[in-house]
Image (cartoon, rainbow, N blue to C red):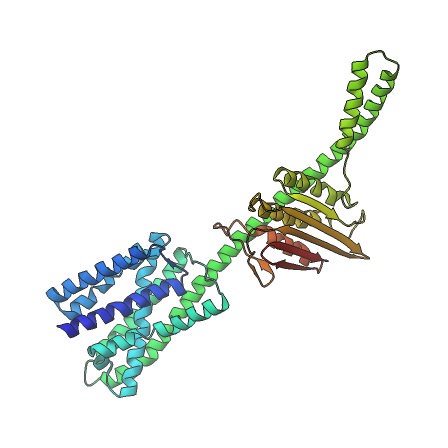
Length: 433
């Protein structure tokens, strides 16, 4: 009886690991964060199977694992339960196909029929361990190289393809397993089973790969649409900034003439209060004269708004350098680069405590046809940079991180380069194009 319990626990352990690893390594699922929930679910499943062992025997207790392992997508994995449950039968078939393939291989090596391998409890457990090896190697490679597996969401066509492959594989392998129990067909069935099971593995991998590729294409299209929408909004924002800047420039020009005329009329007047009021109005108007930062009108219009936002958040903002009035970089692209880099800097400054100095420093310059921009700003924590790309730390990764991508695209348009550096206290973005 003790041996049966050990065999039952081994079967449950291997099946649990196989199903969980397929969910995680292939379909990008993740375990729930509450470890106590995982432990409680495992204990309940084990207790149920021990009761089944007492009542039904080892074979039936192991066979019921198809139903009890539903606890993995229901209680132990995070994500949409409907999607996880829809994938469950296919995942079970994936693990079974690999195990059956190994059992046929082992039968050919030992010179016995496949039924002998299946009927041997310990050899059966050994075959069930086979899927763990490639998935374990993949998990180690992911951790070493920092590869992120995106969660896969399949549509109806992908589900139809996966389950068509799964059903076909079942009808291909089941008869061969049955034939291996007959003495007159056993050896031939074992040899054929090895070839067929390997073919089934290849078909399964192709079906999964096709589903993943289609999913990535769909996600890429969605992201491109989001990028286009975001860039259109930026274009409208920049056009609005330039229009408002032009209106403000004209208003200031006319206002200066009007105030000078009022001042002239007040010189000979006896109303001291009126004269004082006009003088104060002129002094106040001087404070809001259009400020020149770089000498480039488009860049100055963007910087003017950013400086105001920085002041409101208590961030020291400085600009050093000069840009010519005309540069070969289109004003729209310059707006994308400056607005995104400076707004990221403001957002980073807002995360720093008031006791720490908050600053943003913009450096600009040009030589012949080469433009240089650099933004330095204080940060609260280390910024994640991989392959010279910024990675957002926000939960909503779908709708964030677009700004840095737009900067990269705008810079690459002119054959330029972007370099990011961070020492934990100061973040620097350098652009040369």
